[in-house]
Structures are given as C-alpha cells and as structure tokens.
Length: 116
Image (cartoon, rainbow, N blue to C red; front, side, top):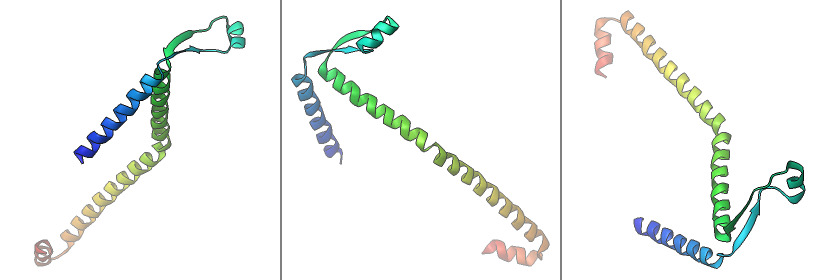
C-alpha cells in the first residue's frame, strides 16, 4: 500500500511539474472590471505565471469544498452528540434502577445474579 501511495504522489508531481512548465507565460489578473474601476476609483492588478493561477484556483476550490462540507454536516454532528448524551443518560438510569432491584431482592438471589 505504501508503494502505491508513493507511485501516486510521484505521478501527481510529474503531472504538476509538466503543467507548470507548459504554462509559464505571465497573465494579468485584475480585481475589478474596467467599469467598476472607474466607479470605485481603485483597482489592483497583478501579473502571475499561468500555472500559479491554475494551482491557486485548484487549492481555493478544495478549501471552499472542505468548508462547505463542514458546514453541511454540522447538523449531523449535532444530532449525533445529542443522541450520545441521551444514550449516556439512559445507561445511567438503567444502572440506577438495577441497583434498586438488587436492594429489594433476597441476598441469595443477588449473589446468584452477580455470579452470572
């Protein structure tokens, strides 16, 4: 299994390096379109190699997906926590009720129950 992981990571590295070498040209990224630039009076411009833009978009998409999934499953985690608390409460009540039954029984019957 370890070798499969190394093979996958090596292949991924080769693919990413080939993408980076094929897309070394610089592109201009602007924060706002020209119309909004006139309206706000400010616009940020940056020039980056295309492979950085591609890899940055992939990383941003993965992070957004992780956050989205975390927020989506919040209700499920909350329900699980409530169910665990209820289970703990029920187990505690069962132990308490079994203790009361043991007090009511004859000593011989209690010893037999404890032995089994």
